[in-house]
Structures are given as structure tokens and as C-alpha cells.
Amino acid sequence: MNREEEDVNSGGSMSRFLNRRVRGLEPYVPGEQPREGTFIKLNTNENPYPPSPRVIEAIREAAGEGLRRYPDPECRVLREAVAGVYGVQPEQVFAGNGSDEVLAFAFGAFFPSAPASGEGSLAGSGGPVIFPDVTYSFYPVYAGLWEIPYRTVPVGEDFSVNAEDYLVPAGGVVLANPNAPTGRALPLREILSVAGYQGKAGRVLIVDEAYGAFGAETAAAHIGEYPNLLTVHTLSKAASLAGLRVGFAIGSQELIQGLCRIRDSFNSYTLDRLALAGGTAAVLDTAYYAGITARIIATRERVSGRLGELGFEVVPSSANFIFIRHPARSGAAIFAALRERGILVRHFDKPRIRDHLRVSIGTDEEMDAFLQAAQEAAWEAVREAAGGPGQ
Ligand code: PMP
Image 1: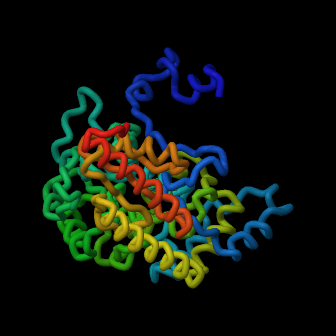
Image 2: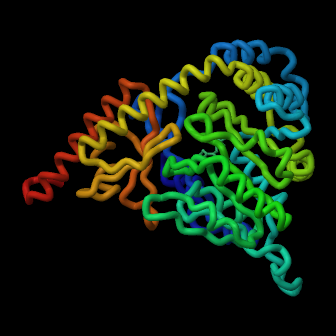
Image 3: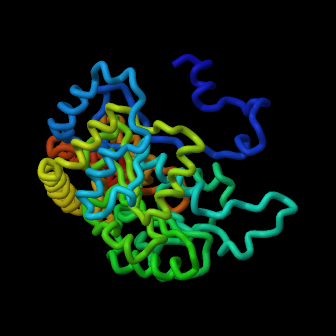
């Protein structure tokens, strides 16, 4: 990449053409996508196994003459498939271009934005939206985009989310379950307690279930009892389709119509014909995905156990990644040691989690290579602590 391109991509210096709101944004920085084959890539929680062969077949079939037509803006076939699998009505399903888009729409539709100057205060709106201080780092970005005031609630020392902290007046609540980047999950009854409390106050609870298939119970079956509950799902992780960009939400018809209002004020066709065809086939092939999910969970448990033996602390994970730290070495140092050995993981240079690394679960072979590199990184730490020639 030459310098000019780099400047364009990183924003460079702030352009005078930007309006006030865009100047104030702090965009999300996605995990690195290096050239194919340069690293064992464990940094963006992609699935190491291929998507269902039925997905590829459906996309091939859709890649024809029909592409001259716009796709179905209502995404009917996909929504019917989701409704069938989750036991809800198609009117209770919304589909979007990845769950990031669905989340962005949900923030815009349901959470109170800051009053323009001269328009009074947030009073009566419940106050700021709340979510954990350690969670998916896109949430504050969406809040910024829509000018929604928010407050973060500290997770415990062990990164556990305490549901009771969310039984307070708020403009709305967002919880990832399992949480990212920690992998910790909350039991369904605690999620529902938050839905109940916030529902009585007329506030929405968004439950981001991006990693739900790997170990948390979905709240989607309870949208009938809680009209303020929206669960958000993705095909990027468990369905191995990060490259296709398909996400969906399940909630009361009232909430789904709210999301449609935002979409139809933005882009009528957020899902293309290939994504609709492939996404539908993925949702329906539950047997295939149960198989690869079980493999990932088995690998996660094996790797977590082995890392413990190597002296790493491993946060118990219900997701397709683990959150780890070595007591003798900084997150940045271990990140660099792994990278030198061809292993790419995710390091967040942020308060409270600076010494942790998030490691996506790959194939057993990839994880063996990771464990070897992690062991070497740990040895270096021990040598360093003993004053020997470490780095
Ligand atoms: N929610 C969480 C918690 C995530 O980690 C991610 C992936 N970065 C997403 C949502 C978005 O996934 P996608 O847009 O690929 O559906």
C-alpha cells in the first residue's frame, strides 16, 4: 500500500468537507484481513470449516440471468426459513447485510438520541443506553453515529456481566450473549429478567447472539412474552459465511417494523440475490452446522485445558474464541511473539483488556500450531522473569 492509499484508508487528516457529526465519529477498526496464506488466521472469529455444500449450490444456482433483477426487498424466503427454524412468524424476523447492519439499524430505531440544543434534556427517555464496559467495540460507534448518549457498566474482575446492574432506568440495554471478546455467557433467565424490567419501562433490550450457537441459550423463543426484546443473529460465525454478509433479528412485529422504517429510509435492497439464496440454504441445513459447531466446541475445550497447563489464564468460553492472558507477559508482547511465528490473533489496546488476547478457534491442526507458538511465547516470559535473554 502506498502512502496515499494508506491516508485514504485511515482517514488521514480530517477533511474540511466533513460535517460536524462525521468529524465527531470514532469509527470501528475491524480485525486485519491479511493476504490469503500469510498467517494462521485466528483474529476475526471466522469459522475454520467450509459452509454447507448446499449453500454453495444455492449460490451457484442464483448466479445466473436472474441477477439483472433487483432482489426481494422483503427477503421473504430467508425470513420464512428463519421463522421455521426458530418457531416464530416471518413478520417477527428482519434480515440485513450482516448483523452489524442490523445492530446499527436497531440503535437508530429504538434508542433515544441526544436532544438538539434548545430541545430540552433526555429526561423522560430513561437516560443513556447502557452496555458493559468490556463488550463488542462497535456498540459505542453506533451510539456515536446516531448521537445516542450511553453509559458503560463495569463487568466483574472475572469479566462476568451482572444482570442486576441492568435493572435500572436506562434509554435501553445492549448485551452480547455470549459476550465478546470475553466469551462469557449469561443464563437465559437473567437475560429475561433484564427484558422484563426494561419492558415495564418501555425500553428495548437488544441481545446480540452472534456467538450463541457455541454455548448460550437463545432468547428468541421468548419474544412473545417480551415485545421489547430483540435478538440479533449472524451467519458469519456458526454458519461459516462471514464473506456473504447475512444477519437477522427476531422480535415482536412492532420492533421489526421499526427496523424496516430505518432500512427503507436508507437502502431498500440490503441483501443481494446471492446472499438471500445462500443464507436461506444455510439456515435450513441445521444438521451440517450442528456437526461443525460440535467440532469447534471440542477443540475449544481441548485448547483451553492445554493453555492452562502452559500457565495461561483462560476465561471460560461459550463462544468460538477464547480470551487469554499470561501472568508474566504483556498482551502486546505475546501478540508479537505469536505473530512472528505466523499466528495472527486479536489484541485490543484498551483499558482492562490490554493484557489479554482473543484467539479464534481454528481447526485442530491450526490450534496445535498456535499451542506450540504459545508455549514458546510462555517460555520466553519465564526466561525474561529469570533475567535471561528473553525479549
Ligand atoms: N456482534 C458481535 C458480538 C461480533 O463480534 C460481530 C463480529 N465482529 C458482529 C456482531 C458482526 O457480525 P457480522 O456483521 O459479520 O454479522
